[in-house]
Image (cartoon, rainbow, N blue to C red; front, side):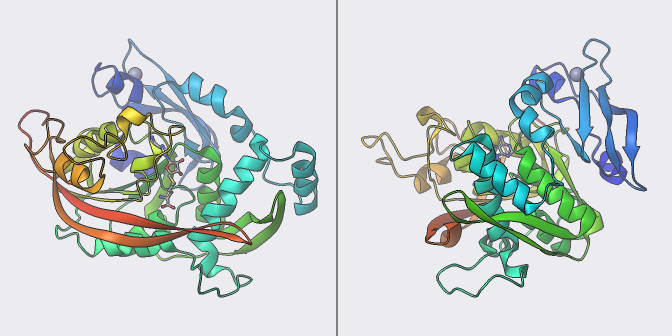
Length: 365
Ligand SMILES: C[S@@+](CC[C@H](N)C(=O)[O-])C[C@H]1O[C@@H](n2cnc3c(N)ncnc32)[C@H](O)[C@@H]1O
Ligand SMILES: [Zn+2]
């Protein structure tokens, strides 16, 4: 956790905030391991005497969830995972644990996201016209080109995964950028790119066979970037903190898309912008069907379509659940995003990009 980001963003206790107990700043209570500008291991405390929750910082990443015990219990395998094993030992472990083990699923996630985020920088990656890495960067810049307002506050990249969009945002602005995600394994990879300027990831060949890829990764303005573990739906930030919030391929990955839109409206300063992209690839494993934006209720006014419903949610008064404080300004109806599953499987998503602006609501601000 970079001290510059901690001091400038001034995070608040996500538990107190979620339970409407106020915005209580977190204090840096202990530092067990530090580098010149960052805390690598330590703890943050809630300053509310009635709460006093402790939030650990592990591998340079603060864990800022309203229920830290629950998050740690669910993610202990990732929090204590080793990153120093040789490719051969990792391969043997993968073979022993087999398909669908937590180890295998993590490797598949890292393979897919590291390939898209950094494959264009990998000297060993062959050019393949059917699948171009860095769809995430192209998607981001297509949305950013439609942001009309000047960005004069920190930037929040929600669901940043392994971090390419966060680095691109730093390059495109002069602001501090915070990449946040709930997936610790992906954040750790992003954090390692940040601290070592190097990427190492298991690139899936087929089945449970992965090849290790390792190469240099360097972007301008990396000092503006940091990565924190938290949920975009219960964020540890004061209202009005950010000048831009980005969420690429995120709306269909969260348990409450509407809750996420409301949380984005809240953390954005009036005049700030949101860039969101989604292929509406709904899955009940991520989002209960009641929360889907379209994709069901075929006999409803929008006949199950997603796009008009998202437009209505981002237009004040157009829907009973229109999001207070966010107004749709621009959209790109179709934008391609490739995901590489393995050597013989590439999925092309057709994403919908929207750019919205945060406005005063008079209610929540
Ligand atoms: C489909 S991936 C997209 C990743 C990246 N933005 C990209 O475009 O490559 C969705 C990401 O959102 C993260 N995510 C899911 N729920 C989240 C939440 N509540 N808050 C923050 N991130 C979340 C997932 O861990 C995953 O990394
Ligand atoms: Zn608290």
